[in-house]
Length: 269
Image 1 (tube, one colour):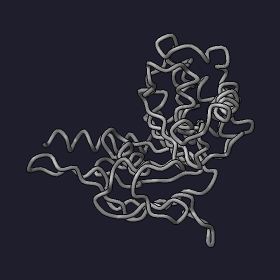
Image 2 (tube, rainbow, N blue to C red):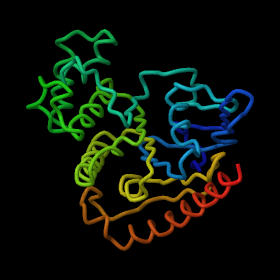
Image 3 (cartoon, one colour):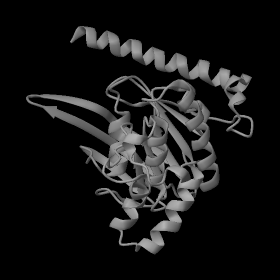
Image 4 (spheres, one colour):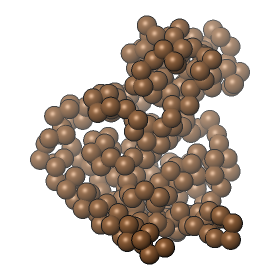
């Protein structure tokens, strides 16, 4: 999965995570191994409950795996760190802070003085089109604006890696597609390494340089495909290109197969 002699930004080695619930144990995934290079945009798709979010939170350092290792730039992960920014499905904004204050929060925690925080928040709010809303509070924003604020906050400390857990799932279709296009533009500008969890196959293909398909629980890697779509990627018509449709048909069949397996297993329990 990685080129010979090339150091991976993220290296996942024989990773297993098992949840203990009373006397029972549920394996989210078993023996996962995956290499992700600098500047890649990797999306993970698969049936519900196959360990996608658990893997993302393990990379973030929020969860300690049962066994196996995760390394970032060759260093073993032991907890959260400033080199990994996280964007959640639920926005996770501080309602008592303005948009600008939310974006600057991580910088403030890092001890950056106000004079140093302001240029960075100006840059990011301009990048996501929220300059005019800098002094608004989250309750005054649409869902799409809240998520743009959350993405800006995750980028504020300039992390090497951006981890995104179904960030657009709660949005309407039009808002979701527009934010996907904005995210592609941001990735094109910054070339961050992105790991993105989604249930949407269309979204995964549109955004990614690679798509990883998980099996039914316990999750394993069933298939990995590289995505080579016509440029510019943020052109919405890419979604109807022959290349896109071919990849979608292939990934859709794989995910459907695993979802049917999971339904069958759940019916027996």
